[in-house]
Length: 237
Image 1 (cartoon, rainbow, N blue to C red):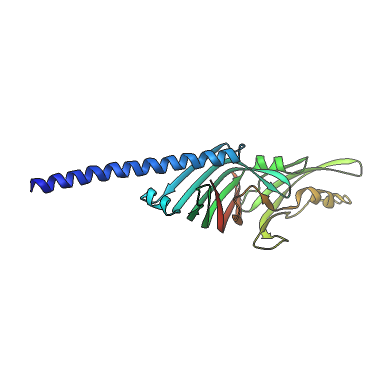
Image 2 (image 1 turned 60 degrees about the vertical axis):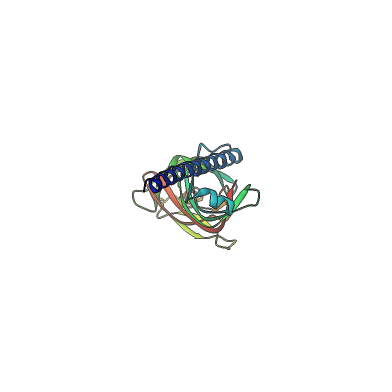
C-alpha cells in the first residue's frame, strides 16, 4: 500500500513537472512568434500570441497546432494604395500546419475582427474630409469642404457604409461609403462636388495575412468594425 502511494506521488510530481515544462515551451514559442511578427511589421504597436491545446510539445512535433490566437495593435494595411491604420486586429487561426523548419504555417481556417477609428479613417481620406460616427450602426458622418463657383462650402452628410463584391472577384470585398442625401440648397454643381469627396470605395489590398478577407462590417461610436475570415490563411513565423 505504501509502495502504491509512493508511485502515485511520484507520478503526480512528474506529471506536474512535465506539464510545467510543456507550458514553458509553449510560452517560449509564443514569444518567438511574436518577435518574428514584430520584426516583419515594425510599425505594429503591440503583438500578443496565445497557443492553445495540450500538450504543446506533441502538437509541435506533429507540425499541427490546434489553435493560435493573434492580437495586434496599430497595424498598417493598404486600401487601394492608401495607407490605412487598424487600431486593433484580432484573429484566431484553427488547424495550423507548420512548415518543416517551423518558419511559418498555414491555418485551415481563420476568423477575426479589426477596428478602424474615425481619426485613422480621416487620416486616410482626401484632404478636407473628416469622418465620425453617424448616430446609428452602419452610418458614418462625413464633413467635407469644396469650392464651387469661387465659393467654399462645407457640408456634413450621413453616409451608409457597406460591403460589396470587389471588381476582381475571388471573394474579395470592397468597403463602400455613400451619402444618404446631400443638401444642395439649389447651388448648381454642389452635390456633385460634395459627393466626389464623401462617396468612395476602398478595397484592402495589402497588410492582412494572406487568405484573410473582409466578411462584414458595422460602425459605432468607437469606429468601423471589420469582420474577417478565410481558409488556408498564412501564419507568419
